[in-house]
Length: 160
Image (cartoon, rainbow, N blue to C red; front, top):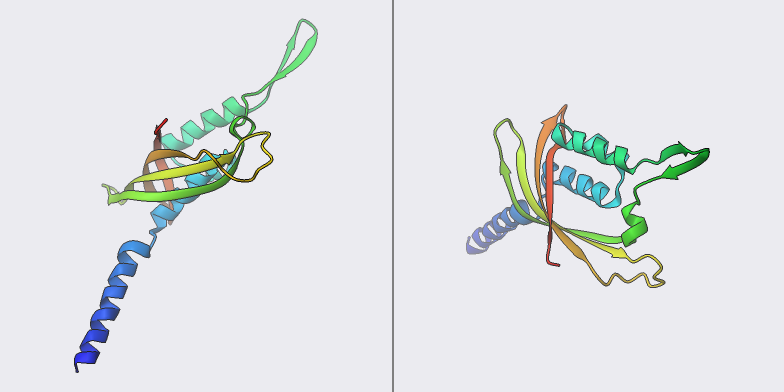
């Protein structure tokens, strides 16, 4: 009897731990997809995962990053905002740490997470990341047509 009770307690504790620490909510999964696309400047994915104010901000950033064609004094010129990969390098890896996830009115979720992005500097032959950069991201997500979309997104760089 004692062994059965112990086994039931062990299974219950394992289930609780799994639900508490290892289960990832659909809202958090949507945030991770959005944050990765944001780090990689994948405008198509960002547009698909955003709604409201976040979608407007992404459209503005997408417009700023597009190439501009100018004809000045008989010369044809092109200008474009540099891509972050051209300045800081390609993404080597991304890590996430969820700090809080709380429901908000209307069925949405307010999420605070730290995203650490490590890039391989431009012109570096090594594939080893040396300077990871962390951002604290505050995100509001809402269920839209059965899927989660980012409504608001703000980030601040941590450290130097």
